[in-house]
Length: 178
Image (spheres, rainbow, N blue to C red):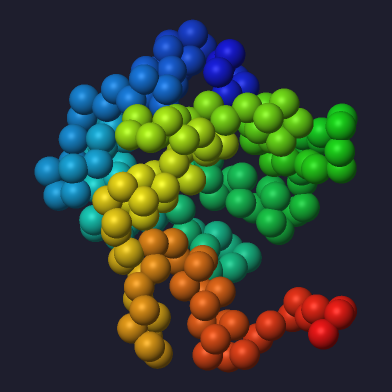
């Protein structure tokens, strides 16, 4: 993909990637949460995993489970076998998949931010960060609530940082001046 650096074995997959990721075309809608998908197979997989909790591929080494066999195989290879065969020639980063290496090079070393907010034109390195931005900034959604003080957060990791710093007083970064 000349926009984000992802690569595919078939032109049909590249065309589908461009249509869905960069042009936002997702004609198959989930009737439960309205999430959109490029094809019916992905919609059915979404319903099974997200709404029905089905993750049939279980890891024999830990408690992880996956909706796709390829995801399980990648998990075993990278987490349990330590395989990260795709190495960045610019820095020491290594990856389990070539598309992750390509995305790393495009976003980190080439400064590409191919995901654009259609409301304010802010640019992001990943679709997930863009979705978080839209939910937090434009939709003012804050679905993650601190169980201790009821403060709401747009991003789960921010809530976890809040709990650690405020309620557990876990503040590992100390000022050297004061």
